Amino acid sequence: MADVTTASRSNVPLATAGLLIGMLLSVLDQTVVAIALPGIAADLGGMDAIGWIITSYVLASTATGALYGRLSDRFGRRAVFVTAVTVFLAGSALCGLARTMPELIAARTLQGVGAGALFVLPTIALSELYPQRLRGRVQGLTGGVFALAGVGGPLVGGAITDAWGWRWIFYVNLPLGLIGLALTAYALRLPRTGGDGRVDLTGAALIAGATVSLLLVAEWGGRAHAWHSPVILAPAGAAVALAALFVWRERRAANPLLPPRLFADPVLRVVLPATALLGALLVGSIVYLPTFLQAAYGMGATTAGLALNPYVLTFMVVSFVAGGGRRVKPYLLAGSLVAVLGFVLLGGAGPGTSYVLLAVGMGVLGAGFGLLMQNLVVVAQNAVSPADLAATTSAVVSVRGLGLSFGVAVSGSLLTRELQGVAPGPQATAEAIPDVLFWGAPAAAVLVALLALLPRAVDTPTMQPIGR
Image (cartoon, rainbow, N blue to C red; front, top):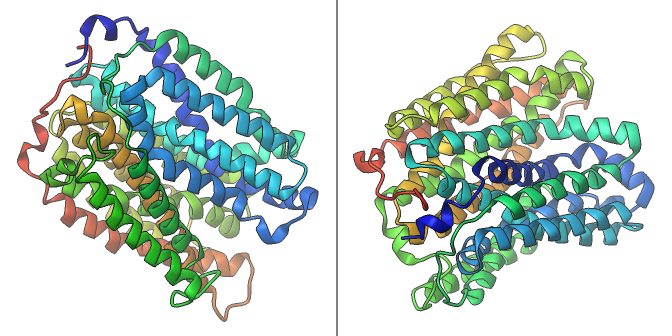
């Protein structure tokens, strides 16, 4: 058990603010860039590589996420978080200074390496800063940050690009990141929990390689290349081989990156696949609702961003309120059922649907996700001992990132199929997107069945937060 005196030295409000700023930046930089891609291509050229501006960031941040939990066990949450923010800010500055497309992609990769810690470590540290009774509610704040940054990113990116140019979507990270860094460096005081054991760098390299291979399959499969092509089969085979090597390595490592005992836990055997499925469901709404609003109602980017308020605000409020409950399983089951209803309502929309009805559907879906997202994290954290908190949280957040990436691939393939043989244009897009969103209903039904398998003991936490 950690040293109570050491942990109590944290200035909790300031540390919370610094951690949430880092989390906000990590999610914003996944979404804020998309709207600036045409301007970047016009300035730097390299249109054939434009997708790698986003892909390189996602690959780097997802691949490194699992490592940061163990690094922070060994070297301390504050030291690792401050280092990661510094790397992220260095990457941001280099992105703004890039003069060629390869330079920008390299800088985005560096930025992503830092960003890998900026969602994982706050999720861990916030659970250690607050008492057990507040953990769910505080983690609910992180769900709100995710919703706000995920949906608001294109709106922010469009406003900044229009006002100052695309380089400023990277430069604006610098003052915000420095504030978050300063607050965390000053206020966060948590003990190291991992002793002096070595970090399993071999395991980290294997899981990073498997993750990158899977994400390449998700990025290219069914769009850039056929699923049966060698370009897809090669990384798919590499992912399987590297994952097998990772399992073999973790069973023999003295201080494994992800201890095998975690995967024997009946709670985590449900939570991890459920989190991946939730990530895939989240991305459909984040990516396609803004596009549908613009195509169906002729809205501009700014107006469409504001029109998403029923989704974003409901997500944030429900995420915060539902985090205060002591019985988590009913919230999770209710959230998955509400998500089914939300996808059914949005799947029945079309170009002629009134905005009021669409807003109801968005609000219902936001409520479902608000009940689900951070409660899954809390369930996983409550199921393990303090020594496994960082590894478990890293696994959950990384799995959600994988789900997000696969969700992009699957929903993109579905949209491509819906648009085949149809004359391109806003009308066609507005008619196709609800059909894509409707597929979320059966997927959310699978989530209902999966969460029903959670043991009753999930509502009885087995650990206490550090320092309380």
